[in-house]
Structures are given as structure tokens and as C-alpha cells.
Length: 363
Image (cartoon, rainbow, N blue to C red):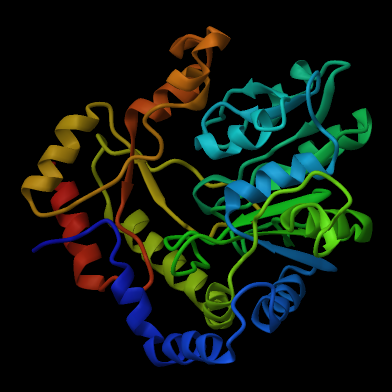
């Protein structure tokens, strides 16, 4: 049997006619940028998250960059960020000239909230919790620290659409919640797309200006902005996906439970989940000491897997001037060298999940 890490065509086929109808509706409108489809998606997504405003953008990376820009965070400022994250989280900080201050991961593969306070200085302006794999960070501790030290919280929600911490949705704890709609995400577009949600009307207006060359009215450029606009086709498609997002989260949780109940091999470790969270399993990570041998074994048996993420940003070549060593953040190093993401997505047949379990148990 052949099992791919993700098959987006299967996810598309679940609601094929509705996606096609939405795309054609946008095409037939004759209006393709900053139109009715984007405005409608902004309204729907804000309502779904429980926030007052949504600003639709070109990508999740742009969401992070513009979030810090809107908050006025720049050169001389510091932002606390997990050491084990995708580089886009850090780009959001460095593109504004600010400095990322890394905190190691805990045994749940999230930022170790107990280590954050020791990294706060007079230059710290914000905390960027990244809700990795679909699990929320420990937002009770993070919000308490933010209140204590007057820090902004910018949430990286790229992998956790719909996850909750103690009943509260991710994206609603911070001043700003940043979302990616990359095609593989729980709510995925058919191209790049992103958004920021907030309850702050002034910030929402500033973000709308930033995405449109710094203007409210064309050619009246009031601030220095960029071009980061969600196109009408993606907005129409995302409206369809949003209708099925909650059901999709439940489906991946069901698939994850099959893995958790079925995998019984002490060489393959399933990281724990926090109590009081709703994990949406954007990914299903496991830890294996000899990752290369494990992935090769799976591939020989027709199973393709992925790694998230093999090179943590603190040792990325583009940031080598920082001078970090791998061992500076032991858990981040461990996860970078041991993590394997098993196939999980809406539309994946149960027989493929059962086959993956069988092969893993024979490893």
C-alpha cells in the first residue's frame, strides 16, 4: 500500500462542487482584489473566532510581519518566541528590525511557559506564542506574564484553527491573532492566504492601510505600507472551507485517536497533550531517536512522512550572526532531530491509518 503524507486532492474532492462554484462565482464577478468575497470572508472568520475584526492578507507570514509593524515594534525591541518553530515566526520579528529572544520547548513540544519570565528585559515588548501542531500553548501563564510586564501578545495560529485552551479559542488571547491559510492547514486556501484577527478597531484600520500601500484611499499613502491582499478567489474558497472546519477538526482528532490507541512500539514516542485543551492535530508528530532509519523503513513500506522542523531558526544559516549553538536549547534540538509527522488529513482513508499503525508496530 502507498500512503502519502498528505493528498490535497482528496480534501478538495470532499466538497468539490462547492469549491468550484465559489471559484466561478469570484471569476464571474469581474472583481478580483479587495472585493465582496474578501469582505464576506473577513466577516465570517471574525464571527467564527469570536473577535470583532478580521483583516485578510496575502499569507500567514505577512500576517506576522504586519502584526508587529502595526504594534510599532522595531529596532531595539525584543520579542519572546519559541526556539522550536518554523522560520516564518521569526521572520515576522526580524523583518521589522526587532530581536527574537528564544525560549526552549517543554515536553509537550510547545514554548516552555515557565522559562519565559527569565527572558523578559526592559526591551521586551511582546510574546509570540506559536501553537504548534494544532495544540495551544499554555496561555494562562503567558497572559498572566503579559499583564504583569505590560507586554503585547501576538499569537501565531498558523496550525491551530479552532483549537482551544480552557475553552477559549486560540487567536483570542492576544492583541492580535495571526492565521495562515496555506493549503495544508486546517482551513486551507488553494494558494497562499492569511489573516489577522483583533478586537482593537484602531489596529484593524492600521492593518488595512498597511496591506494596501499604507492608504485608506488609493494614491493617498498616509503611512509606509506594503501590498498584501487576499484575492477574491481564495476568499470565496475559504468561505466554503470555513463551513466544514469544525467537522474537519473533529475528523483529524478521530484519526489522531486511532494512532494513539494503535501505536504500541516503545521506539516511537507520542508527545503528551496538555489537559484542558482542544487539540486539532494539524499534524501528528512522533519522536524517534534514529529518524533516518525510521523514515527509510516507512518509505520502503510505501509510507511517506514529513519533518517539522529539521533546522530550528536559531541555527538557521540566514541568522548565523547570532552565534547560537544547537545545544543552547536542548529540547528544541531534540525535536528538530527526532520529530516525524505521520500522515493525517481530511479525506485520508482509515485503512491507510491502520496500515501505518501496523507498519510502525513492526519497526
